[in-house]
Image 1 (tube, rainbow, N blue to C red):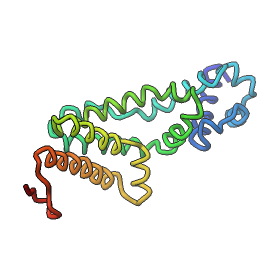
Image 2 (cartoon, rainbow, N blue to C red):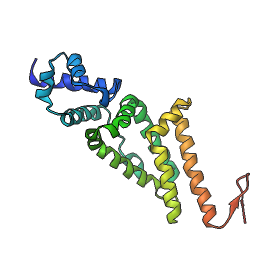
Image 3 (cartoon, helix red, strand yellow):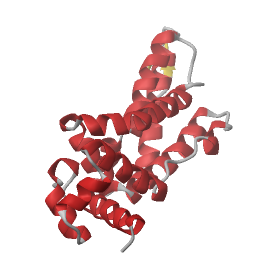
Image 4 (tube, rainbow, N blue to C red):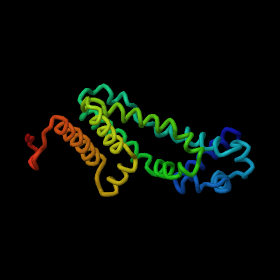
Amino acid sequence: MGKADTRRRIVEATVELHEDVGPAATTITAIAMRAGVQRLTVYRHFPDDEALITACSAHWTERHPAPDPSRWLGIEDPRRRLEEALAAIYAYYRGGARMVERVLRDEEEMPELAQVLAPWHEYMREVAGGLAAGWGTDVHRQRTVRAAVGHALDFFTWRSLAAQGLSDEEAGELMVGLVAEVATGLAYEAAGTKRDPSGEASG
């Protein structure tokens, strides 16, 4: 078995264990056993946790690339733009749910994970900022809509809705409705009007 093949087996074993038990509970002994190598062999290829987690992340990300924002950024209507983005993001979550959940869960325990996840968090902030645009110009309104969009994009929001039996499409519709309701309510508030239970504006 060549060095490249050994390295690949170690990385694949690590990915499997991260999905099964999470990064924090993954040990070098478990990796070595699953990869069919000695512990020393793992250390020869990956001298520390940072090197191993970085390789694992690159391997998994190559097979589960994050959605390309260009798929929705050209859509002018903010509601349709959010619909397209949530459809893509929720499909991504469903395809990698086990890994995403365990990595996010263990992030606070492992500084190495925080470093590897920094680009992901930056990506999500940029996505949220783009999706929050176009709902209004009032500063307070923008801030609140941005918070609602961030909530809709959050992995644990998707997981909670999926656990309630909603399909990705249904979950997306619910969250788009939430953001639209927040934006509409703030618009009425800014105009000095209010809505009655029927949804009509009143002075």
